[in-house]
Length: 83
Image (cartoon, rainbow, N blue to C red):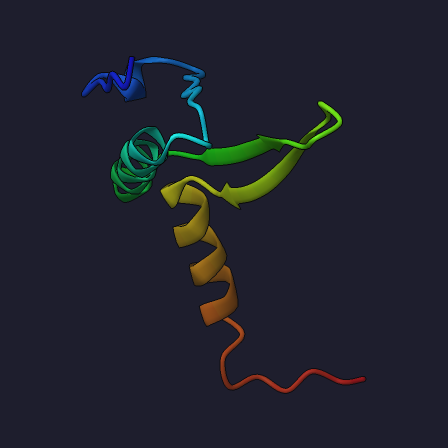
């Protein structure tokens, strides 16, 4: 139904199921992805192949994890590591 919610953070898991062959639905889903990503949500994109199998095509970690990873890598700037 192309619905969206400002309450996504209240849930453990939300699903956005759409027909990827329908351009308007696909475009709307892309906008919802961008909005959810900007809000810092963890995102997984799965796509069904011709045989009916599902494969994960994209992953965006939650914003808190990105900050943690950045701080960890920033602590290593300018340090030499031995081989």
